[in-house]
Length: 124
Image (cartoon, rainbow, N blue to C red):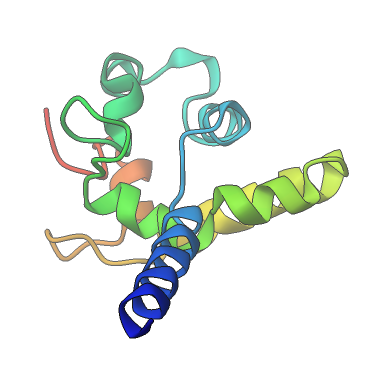
């Protein structure tokens, strides 16, 4: 019986943990592009596409910038408010703004990297 209880607790914890991860939902991507890539002026951002936040071939693999964004944008929270378009947009923009303040491995903030046209998660 103890094993069953432990297994149930572990499963519930795993499900709760996985729901907290950010996911490149189309609205997240749309607002990111509108905020940082207006008019497709930055070729590096356009070429990087999903690799601005993700690394590797799986959507679950995130680079350091993607992990920073994931602290502030979660699919679960977005799903709670998505019916209110204004609140959802505000949530996304505030999350991106908070992630801008995080420090990258290079020592600069992600916001500084984005403003200088550099990929915040590294790369060319």
